[in-house]
Image (tube, rainbow, N blue to C red; front, side):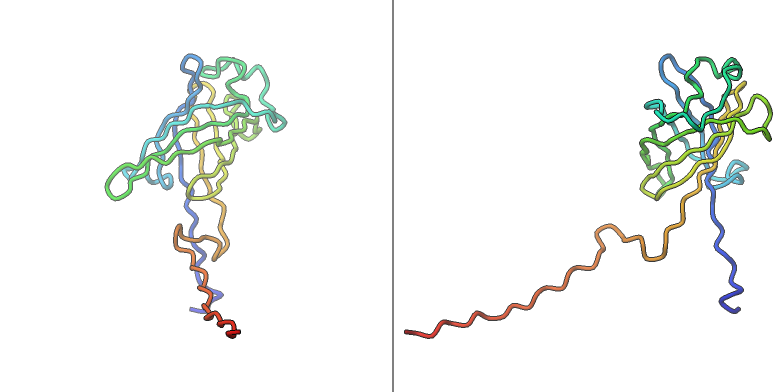
Length: 183
């Protein structure tokens, strides 16, 4: 094959499926995630849990009308405000679940006319040990079902350095000190 005919690498879009609910004073999103949609058909899925840490100051992208706030799980006027969530997702590593913490994952809610009336679009962004990513999905207001896809931003070749494996600086050659002439 010629270099110009090589297949482009397939980008995986991890899928996160869960329920957004209020528990007393907390807003939580709990569920499971897989490397793609097929993981939910008998593949490998792992748990995740995020708690809203604070409401975002910037609400300019949020155009959810107050009438939608009355739907099902969307009780409370602040539930659909753009907000930051912190939490974790589990990943199977060497046969064990490893918890990967995340902080300040931004969720933005907005109306999308192509969606049913009681469903809002969810977009967001965050970073973790695997890189920066965006979120794209939906929230069904009557059930609290919040499903998003996570898409990691491509990293230019050579931009990643393995931890602790950066090349050492070459040692400077030692030149012997010259002795001062005896007086």
